[in-house]
Image 1 (cartoon, rainbow, N blue to C red):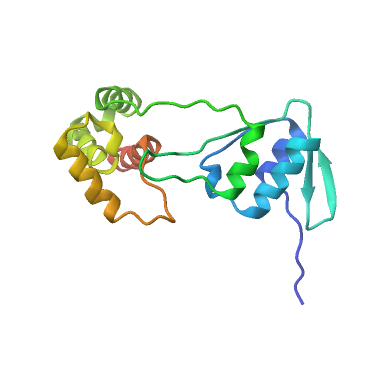
Image 2 (cartoon, rainbow, N blue to C red):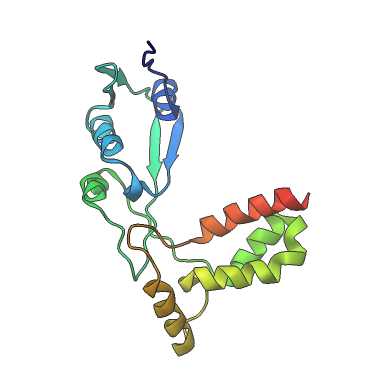
Length: 171
């Protein structure tokens, strides 16, 4: 019969080697990961339940995390509330469409021809991207009506990931 063999993941390697880790949307992390992070923050020990052992974090190990928040939908979970005291909060405002346009055109020059359509899609899915008007507020209400509270709304990072995929297709 087969057997389960423990294989170190990215977090375990980073803890051992002293790398930096970015956990995006930590508010969507599993309870198991949150539990492992708590012992890492409190004692600089990563608990590996499959092996019943702790790994001491390298002195240079650093952990960064992001939480995507929107005015309309709160994504704070009990798990992220537990973690709040271990992080320094830095709130970044949503960039405007002209800034997004500059980022895309410099990072993905092959997409300049498609930039107007990309920005049109971004405006549709990222409510805070443009200046608010009464019409835009109505559009936001329509988007939120279809928003599943178990998922997150799109953000600039999603548009940039989409651009990276488009850039590969255009090549």
